[in-house]
Length: 125
Image (spheres, rainbow, N blue to C red):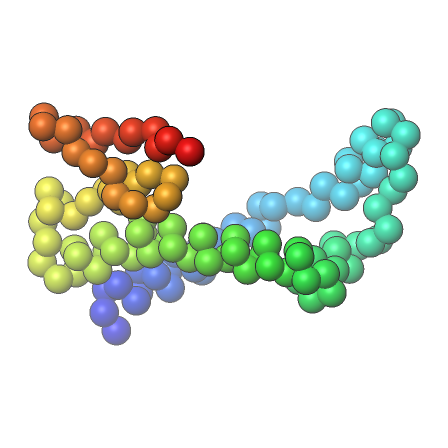
């Protein structure tokens, strides 16, 4: 196994363990807040039922979940795996970016100013 895959497996394992033990369900607090503001309690009943509704039954929520997954995957590749890959193939710390290149909201790379610092310009609509 290469260092990239070992690093990726370690990141996934740590994230899974942290999410299993450090993240708490706040359903009771949400129900209390809803009751205090006169709203009805959630009809889903449990976290599993809400997950099934958002992931399987409602097509709009399913599309949002898929878009969020793709966005998080892109971030993981840009921020985590790309620097690990470059470092594993001999890039020095100076050659390995610690963050991805800034982009405009359109996804196009930002233009650089003559001094070399990125300049993000507002696009006219």
